[in-house]
Image (cartoon, rainbow, N blue to C red; front, side, top):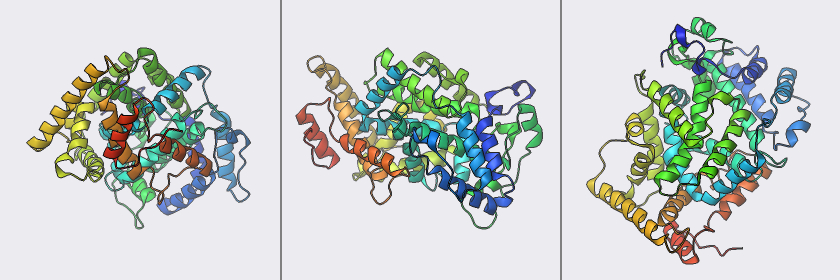
Length: 455
């Protein structure tokens, strides 16, 4: 979105000074992409030792850590209090319960709603495309996202000393700042006016060696046209894809929550947004407010489309990964069709997902979706909690979780203790506690796994 003089105070021209200053201090003196890559690797080795929320206060840099890195990280932790004073532990706990109750369904909504909507903003997609994170390494991007979501939403993720949500979020905050630093080749200017003056477009001439650090460093950025990379507006929008879009997806599947539950879920993610450095005034606290903010950001992003458009190839890569998990050819378009249903016509067009799909596949999906919704509505009058829709989306989620998150040859990049908690959680999701035993047996057969006996 092109900025003019009247937009200098826009959230798109603001980043995250505490994290940006920390990264600038740690990368000071590193010249060129090779030195930058070596320095970032040293920082990552230190961040791997941030294993739990409670451990942050006692963290000490390793004996061989560069003093500049050590000092910057200590100041960063001291200046970024974990939770805001407005955080409500009861509402956070309720949100955790809701996430765990949705279990495998949460993963289906992640793949077919949250992630696709995340790539609707052209500027945000441009950063991901520059890094090759979706178009070439889709599974890596998915696993990186899960490595933050699960530690945050598991029980005690944000509030318990043994939880890992705060520690993971503070790492992600530094990752965002590092991306900004590499693309801008320095810390973002303090004001929008300085950003417009200081950052002309740079030619994307990748140096020898390749790799994400080289690509980002060579990519360059036009702040006058695009604002700052990973700016406050984009961060607030991304937050909405993981709380508002998730809740909207449940509504569109006929599984919507009570208003108090929806607002508890929004609240928990807003607490996470605070830890990630997102300004409170950019957060949404009700579904109506979230819907308005989400639509406004998307509408303004469409006013200045990018050429070439990075969004369709990224969305196509995500759809291919899901299609590869479906054995029957006639069912392979179902991820695209479900994404269309959950994201709507405009977003689907932005992502290039409105192309032709075989008539048979469309008929099967449309008739099946309508029949399931109608059947659920009738049966729930007599059997509260019954839902074929929930079962089918859990089956889809199980296949995706097995492929991307439970592969023992590629464990999620998490501290060992936290990884064990995530694996136990995913394992426990194989049985739906809200469904009758016979429906769990049906689900198990459709998912191609043995039905678990409840503990």
